[in-house]
Length: 190
Image (cartoon, rainbow, N blue to C red; front, side, top):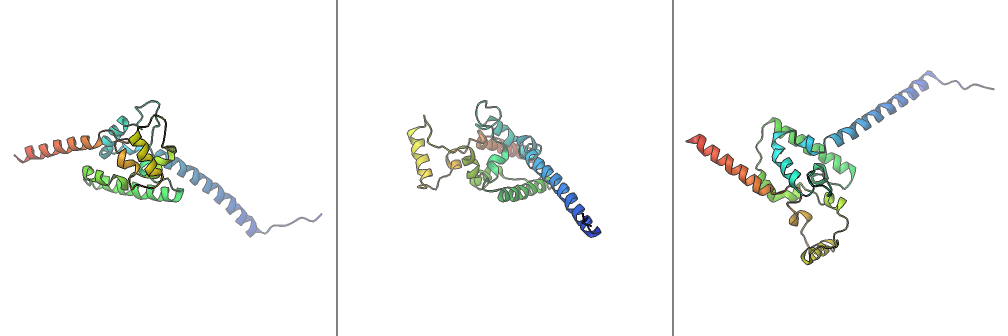
């Protein structure tokens, strides 16, 4: 019986492949963990800029205070669910933007941003959970709106009608916060 002798270079190459595979596996597991760990309200709410958003999410239909209804994570609504690459790219881009804004203490006009809510709330997130739109007990108006949406006969989106689902009374609370800030600025001037 003849023994096959492997060259030293082949052994090093094979060892490198095995070690590289193990390292890639560790990085992949760590990455999946990091994606999950940075997707919920606890993480997002760790910056004071998001306090009000976490409070209004908590009170909203998909917040954790509502038992028996689906609890949505921030990324369920605020990232696209149209493929892992698009999801991860936008997660990285959005996360970097938020960190830079936080570090630079950039003030955001959140009330004005509400007018553009459909740019940062993704329809694919709604549709991931809400597959069946014509459910028993829905009003006639809701049935017609959902039917038109399903048939593509409207430009309305989920957020057009259900804008308070994710954050209960957000617009009202932002307005209150702005009014308080305006009063404080006026009292500081006088």
